[in-house]
Structures are given as C-alpha cells and as structure tokens.
Amino acid sequence: MRILLVEDEMEVALSISSALGRAGFVSDHVSSIDEARRALARQPYALVVLDRRLPDGDGISLTPEMRRMRPGIQVLMLTACNKTDEIVAGLDAGADDYLSKPFDFDELLARIRVGLRRHGDALPKIVVGDLSFDPRIRDVSVRGKSVIVHGRELTLLEVLMRHADRMVSRQSLLDEIYGPDDDIQPAALNVLVLRLRRTLEEHRAGVAIHSARGVGYMIGAVSA
Image (cartoon, rainbow, N blue to C red; front, side):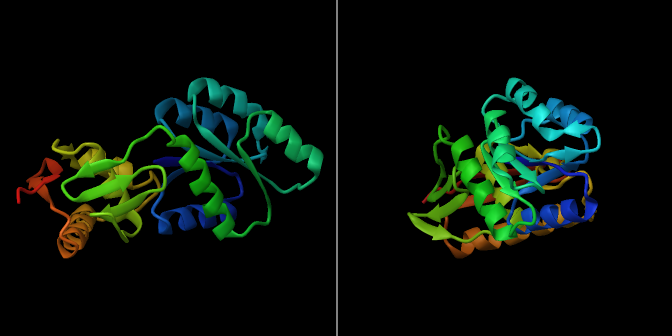
C-alpha cells in the first residue's frame, strides 16, 4: 500500500519518509496542494499524511477533493497547532486522524498502521501455498505462525502475492517498491528477491519465486 506525504518542510519530510521506509512502507513526497492533487490523480494511494500549513494554502481544503478522487482513502493530518478548534476543524473536514507537531515517529507509524487497517477492512487474506499475507495489518505467516519480513522485502512479497501465479514485470515491481526520489541501484531488485527467497525457504513456506530473465518475477505454490 502506497502512502502520499504532503509536507513542505524538507527536514520533516525526509525524516518521515525515512521512518516509513524502515517500517516497510513506500511513500511519495510532495510539498504543495497542487502537487498533491496531481499525485492523487496518478496513483491510488491508501493513505495521505497531510500537513495543514502548505505554501499554496491550508491542507484542510484538499480533504473533500481527495474523498471525491479516491473514495476510502485515509487522511492523517499534521499540524503545528494543537488547539482543540483546529483539531475539530480538521476532523470535521474529513480527516480520519490528527497529529500535532512535534510528534514521536513511533506514534506516527502506529497511527498509520491503524489507518491502513481501516482502509483494508474489506480485503481478505491472500494465501499461496502455506504462506498467507493479511493486507489489513501487513502480517506474514506460514501455517499460522508469524514470519518477520523486513522493509522493502515485505512490499515485494505483498506485490507478488497480490498477483500470485502471474508474472510481474521488473518495472512494475520497482514502481511499487521504490519512491520517485530513491536512488535505485541496478541490482537492487535482484538482491531483494534473493533475500526474500531465503526467508521463504528457511520457513518452508511452500512457495517459490520464479523469474523470467529481463521480464520479471512470479510467486506460486510448490507441489508437495
């Protein structure tokens, strides 16, 4: 699930983007309402982290439009002001949650996970072989036992499982796993696939990741 970060303070934006990446999320960063509007038209984001004070206006003005463009999208609003009337105004405008600056990054991530659970309420678990993935809480398990999959490997697994038994192109995987500002090394995807294969083999997940040279990758169940 991809996250849109709308924040004009570059230091804050970099810190949030870094925290999201470490937690296994893929995020795109824009710094204005107009840029956010264009990004939302291009990409079906699950959640938006939206600053209120932006160069071209109050972020709150974008919320109704986001609801029309992307029904079901979750909006976590950020503000430097923690006055009750500002919080109420943001929630009344359609925000799902509100967080005042400065904030703790663990709390931010926790609130994002809650928002994504709401977004994924209707999404069933994906099962391939003995492996299952719960998109509501981004939990991976093998025969009911949780398996820890880190960072971008988790995003890779999620994309492959959403398209189980179908080849996913390298470019599609790169677009899902990395943001537009990431410095992607030529062998980055190969390394991620190698690490994920090792994890799945170690836990005997009953699946295999197949590759087509120069085309992409596919995950499928392995016959007993």
